Image (cartoon, rainbow, N blue to C red; front, top):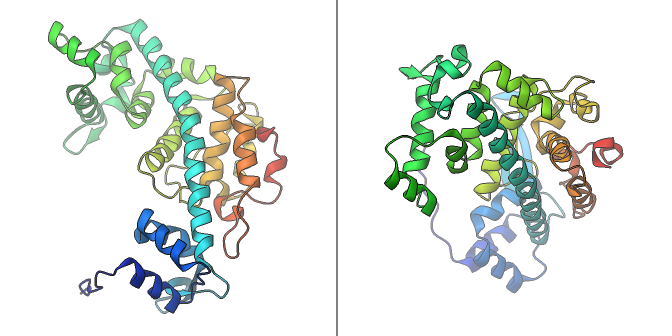
Length: 319
C-alpha cells in the first residue's frame, strides 16, 4: 500500500531554505524568493529536476531513481534560466502551430466540403473502416462527433451563437472547422476519405499516413504549449513518422536516433517542413535554430536531452 502524502505547507522563505538544505546553490536569496512567489515551487520543480542526483533503482538495476538531493554545482538561477528558455520555446512553437492549424482547417473544409456540406457527420463520406472502428461501446466517428459538436455548443463566439439562433441544421464543415481545436482536426484528418487524405497530404509533399502522424505529434505539442507545461525535454508520446527520402529529404534524419523523435526535436523538424510548405518565405526555422543555439550554459542540462544531437544545426531543414 502506498503511503499518504504528509509534506507540510511551506512559506516561500522555507521553500528556499529547503532547497539550500538539499544542495541547491542560491546566490541571490531575495531574487530567488521573488521567483518562487511569481513562478511557483511546483512549476520550477520541473526545471531543476535535471540537477537532482540519481541513484540505482533497487528493483531494477538497469534503471535509476531521481532523489531530492542536488548535484554539486547546481544553482537556483539555472532552473530559472531553463524556465525562461522553455517559455520562449513554447511561444515559438505556438507561432508555427497556429499557421499549421489554420492551414489544416482550410484543407479539411475544402476537401470534405466538395463531397457534402456535412461530410464530417456521415461516415459514408469518410474512411468507413476507420470511422466505424469500435470505441468504448460506440464508434470512433460517433465519439469524435460528440466532442466536435460540444466544441460548437459550448462556444461563446458571436458568429456561433448567431448561426445556432438562425438555422436548425448543423454547421457545415467550412464553418465547423473554425470552432474545433487542433486535436479534433487531427482526428478528422485521420478519418477522412482516403482520396481526401491523399489530396491534403500531396499539398505538403507527403504520404497520407506520414501527414497524419505529423499532425498527431504536433497536436500533442500544442496541448503542452496550451497548458504552459514543460516542453524543452518533454517526452513526445505521439512521435512523428520518419518520412521517405522522396517525401521530405530534409526530415529523414529524425530516424537516425530514437531520442530525436521521442523528444521535441522531431516535432520541431516536421513543423519546419510544414510551415515552409505553407509559407516558403517564413523565418520560423531560423528563429527556432537561433533559440536553441542560445541555450543557457549550465551543468546537467543540454540540448541533446531534447533530441538536438551534435551537428543538428547543420541539417538543411534549419537553413
